[in-house]
Image (cartoon, rainbow, N blue to C red; front, side, top):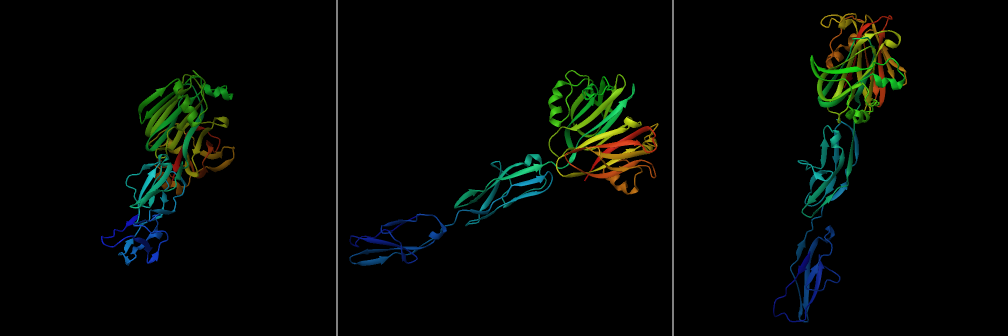
Length: 412
């Protein structure tokens, strides 16, 4: 900022100048022009100049200088780590005259419609992770905040489930699952020969996998395609040997499906379902398997993994008597199923023999069919830590055998 004085004709020479601020001489300000060196708030004030020669002096009119300060950020946004789906906010505090405006940015790109001091993401997804800054501006200048890093953690969820069971000749096992919240890539595998690498001599030689939507076959696979090897690795599934007769398929799915596995001969088969997609919006919310329950090593075992962070509540049911009645009419059902839940170390967490009526509202909340009143079916609720595997084991409470259904549901 520069002030200049012009002295009219007839005043005589030579002339001397003394600039003043608020009536106080400014040292060294003795020319016809004076520049304010720093555009800072401390330079505000009334400026005039005293012009003198040997005949006398005259003082100019005072000029008021008001310098509006550029924005100053007093509180920077802070980095945050949040579970997917949990509301998160970035805030900033800044001063300036006139009051500044705000423009939030993600990874250096303006976020449309966000021009306030606090930016809130109501339900963050994986895609919301990144570096967030705020550009603060007024007519005196602008300043960009420090970067705040948003880390989005996956909340606890069902990531995969498996059922290992022996099948007789011409027998099949049915594994059902539900994807809720949209479409998601799901990997389904039927391992037979691959089990030989774990020392199992009775593995099924050539399992066949069929995927159904209601009663309509969507896709099938006999011998797995090698292109899926990278998908196996990405979800943590053990590898299949090259050119083996195991079966596998990958599909983008939404809603409920059934995987039916059979073979050209008898043997033990492992049926697996994996969440192979990204994000936490669409997810596996229900996995079930139906097969014959034997004794000893031939009981029905459903393994599952809870991925993400935190804990997840699950509803687990072992259904025999109810599916033997209307409308299911499954023959030869297990008369009195007992349900036991184990952790990855083989420690029993909880068990149930006969379900309790207090669970009826929970059944309805997840869309599970009602159990027959007074039946000897089993059901329980457990809160499980993420990052670990679990197994639900179904056996006859009285040592009996028969057809049974095991179900695992996510709960809020």
